[in-house]
Structures are given as structure tokens and as C-alpha cells.
Length: 588
Picture 1 (tube, helix red, strand yellow):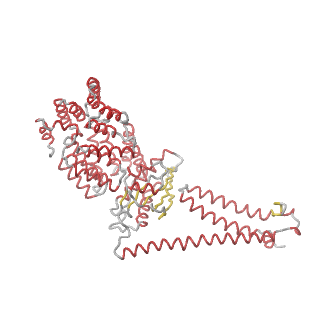
Picture 2 (cartoon, rainbow, N blue to C red):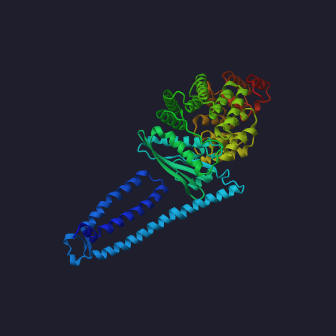
């Protein structure tokens, strides 16, 4: 008997066909399932390997063994006259037909029905556009970039996945036709198992971009998928296996794919990521990650990483701008001497603008230096306007505009800027805090309290919020409740400040005086303004004015709040008050 006939008799051909068809169907279904549960790519590859390795074993068993009524036996042990291979072959034929039918059904659905529905939706959108209807309304063009999952073996690479998510967010935010939720809003869902639809509703967006990052040395794998939130439909997905040097091309490809998937018609070109040295970029992402964790040590580590990045890439504008922010935060937190921190921050922001004059966030940062430290009010207004012209919807720019409006006692304007941010990003925590604080400065205590409580619902560990609530309670004549509120404060310095105020209201004057002396001893070099606020609350006008004069002499950055600080309202009728404002040349 020829080999061909023997293979046919032993059903080797039938088994091979059945295995191939079944394997194809299994891999198609697995691909859909694994993509939807955002499984690592290696899972699919391992499954494919098992399927491929299993094929020669299936062929071998079909050749060497035969299924008999008594079970599986070696082929040479079976009497040819008793062989049931023809009967087994018919069963295999029927199984092949069934599997082929399933495969054909899947193929038909995927290529014709599913594809046709997508094409129909596109045609409908075009028809609406032709009829004068906007197929992509403002809400339809809204998107949130959720923190990409770190799939690396090293948990320390979390900074890279977080950083890439933020960079994609910033790149998409440069497209005026897109509404993009800010980092502080989107990153609230980091580490949480949350339904995409629920996240989109909370962020007030129609689409979500999510994915994962695997980094191993200089090799990276980025998986991204764009999801329509209301029905969970995947508009686009892709996996990129590249070297670290190609990270900027990946960002460009993802942003272009998002624009195409959302059918956004741009007035200009899709923004491109700034290409810098890959090692410098990695250090930049690490520095921003450390800065976001807050605290003295984290600030120091972040600044060191920024410096290392700038040694490698001296003209890296984004890194210079971020370094300026870190220096200023150190200075205003009392972690770096004022004069030293100001010189470093100003130099960094000047370098950022020299390398990229179109960097709106750097203009916003410059305006804060000009107002809080230089008292260059006209220069600050010009810088804010420049930033607004470049990026009118950037939350950092709107925050700077709100801050400057508050300095000039234009509190309704400040409130409008902060609420513009919240209209686009309802979970932007800093803006929620700013709105609550402006309401407090306006004397709208109940509204302010409600806003601060809302903030704590979103972030129970928010620094300073319990102290602000305690001040509201003190102004409402509830010192016992204020003291209990201060027990919850997570910032030790703010807690100490609030307790001094509360002790005075509780008629525990000796304790208040003792605690105030200790507070002054520790913080007098940088906290003249809050010390003046404590004395004003206690009714010691002379001491309060004396510390304000000291704050003016020190050019305390907190003096930008002098017109609206609630603790200082009792000083406004003092004849020395106007002299302080004149020294600052502050418009009022």
C-alpha cells in the first residue's frame, strides 16, 4: 500500500484538517477575548506556540494510534479486519463540516455584518454632516487618557508607564478640536478596577484611551486602545514593539490614530511629540513621577533627575519648565531659601522659553514668578495673556489666570477661570480646591464648605483641606468642631497653623501663645504672612501689621493674597494698611 493511501486510511489527513480549522477558530476567539481583557501580548503568543507545537503531535497520534471500541491502541496492535477507521473517518468528516461552518459564520459576521455596521455608522455621520449637522459634537470629541498599566517585570518602571500616559495626554491636549481631561482628573483612577463607562461619566468625556506598557532595557511594548464609552465599542487598538528610541514615533502614531478614529477635522496638522534623547526622556518621566509624589525628599530626587536629563539634552524646554516648577514648589514650601530658589526657578523658565517660545505652560509659570516674587503686575498680566493666546483651554494656563485675578481681588473672574477648568474636567482636584478657596474669600461660607467636602470625597488625603474647613467653622463660631476637623489634617504644618487659631477661639490663650512661639521659631524666615494672619485672628492688630511689614520686606510670595485673605479683614480700616499696598504697588 502506498504511503498516501496509508495516511488516508489512518485518517491522518482528516485529523490534520480538523486540527488546523479548529486551531484557527480558537485563535480568532482568543484574540478577541484577550484584547478585551487587556491581557499581555505574551499570553496570545504562548497560546499560538502551544497550538503550533500541538500540530505534529496530533499528526503523530493519528498515524501511530487508532481509536477502537476497547479504547486507544497502537495501530500495529489492531487487526485490520476489525479496524473501525472508516467509521471514525466519517465522524471526523462531520466534525470538520461543523467546525468549518462555525469558522465560516465567524468570518461572515466579522467581515460583512460587523464591518457593514461600522460602514453604516460612518455613512450616517457623513449624511448628517452633509445635511448641516455636526457629526462630531464637542462632547463627541472629548477623551480621557487613563494611566497605562505597567506590565514590566520591574515595578519600578511605573514612572515610565505613568509618564507615557501623561505625554500622550499632553500631545492630544494640543489639538484645539479635542477636549482632553487633565492628568489630575484621569490619574484618580490609577490602580482602580473601574468600568470604562463609569470613568467616562465621572470625567464627562465620550471616549477613553487606555493601554499598557512593558519596558525591558531599551525595548518597549505599548498596547493602546480607544474605547467609545457609552457602548464599550473599540474604535481602534494597536500594539507597538519598538526600541526606546522610537517612543516619540509611537506617541505620534497613537495621537494620529485617535484623531482619525474620532473623525476629527483639524484646522492644522496633528501635533508631533518633541523628539529628544531617549535616556534624557526617561529621566524626565522619572523626575515628573517623583515630583507628583510630593514631599521634601521627592522634590530633591525629582530635581536631580531633571538636572541629569538636561545634562544629556541641554535644550529640552519641557524639562526646563518642569524644573522651574520644582524649584518654586521647594521655595514656597520652605524647603529651599527664597533667594536661591527664585534665582534657580527664574533661570529655568527663561531657558525653557528661549528654547521654545511657544510653550504656554512656561509663560504661565513666568507669570507666577512675576506676580508672587517680582511684584511686576503688568508683566504678569502680559505673560498670562500670552499663555491664554497660545493655549486658551490648558488647565495650567487657566489656573495661572485665576491666580492673578484673585491677586487683584477680581474674585468673580478667578471663579470663572477655575470653573472653566471644571466644566471640562469635573474631577480636577486643584481647581476644586481653588473654587472652594475663592468662595471662602468671598464670604460664601456654606458654599465653600460644600466645595471642600466634595474635594475630600474625591481625595480624603488632600493636604490643607481640613484646615480650610476648620477656618470656616471658626468663622461660624464653632471652635470645638474646628478642633475636631483639624484632627483629620494630613499636613503637619497646616495642622499646627489651624490649631493655633482654634486655641485662641477656645480661650486657651496660654497654649495658643506657646504654640505660636514655637511656630515662629521654626518658620519665621519664610512664613511672615501666615504669622500675621494668626495675630490678626487673635485681634493683635499691631503685631499683625508688624509681621505684614516684615513680609513686605522679605517679599513673601503669599502677599499676593493680601487683598482677599479672610484672616486679615479686620486690618483693612487700619491707616497702615494702605501703606502696605502702596509699598507693593499693588492695584486695588
